[in-house]
Length: 213
Image 1 (tube, rainbow, N blue to C red):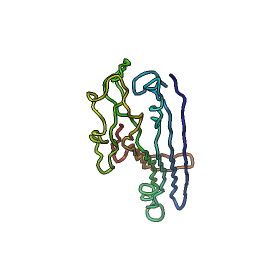
Image 2 (image 1 turned 90 degrees about the horizontal axis):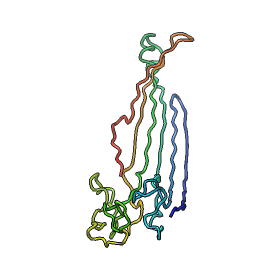
Image 3 (image 1 turned 45 degrees about the horizontal axis):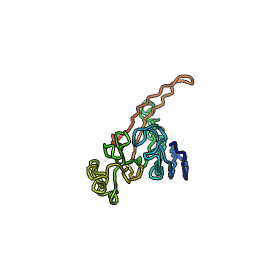
Image 4 (image 1 turned 180 degrees about the vertical axis):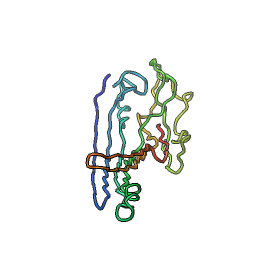
């Protein structure tokens, strides 16, 4: 059964400012994308295949590409130090530096909770788990090794053989994402036709780890 149900809502805001050697831009998007199928589906069948061919409703949920909040910044700062006055050598070597960067923040990716058992007996490697309580934890109680309420799901030994797990698809959201990419640039002009640029670039400047579900 190939499903084609999809819904998407989004709202975006973009702004920019440039003044006195500083240029700054920002964009923010709030969105929600729903569908009932995904590539590499939860039961490892073909793309577009739901878990239960006779009931596709439990598969309608957050799309795997859904990111509720996306915030991006871009900025350029022309450093004013040593640009005027003083020794010409000092101006040439210490003046004219530029700091630029792009910073991105995103909400985490949605994911499903599964058991590594063919509980329904349809010839697959895994099935969605049975949920019996709220699986979400308060943000201050989440750790990388305990991101959701594991007690909210039944172990496979307590699930009913021959039935699919009752949890929906992509009911939980994983850790968020952030990255800072920063460049330090120096432009040196020797003649009208001759110039040299020094550029030092760093990606994920603060070495912030980003984890998947």
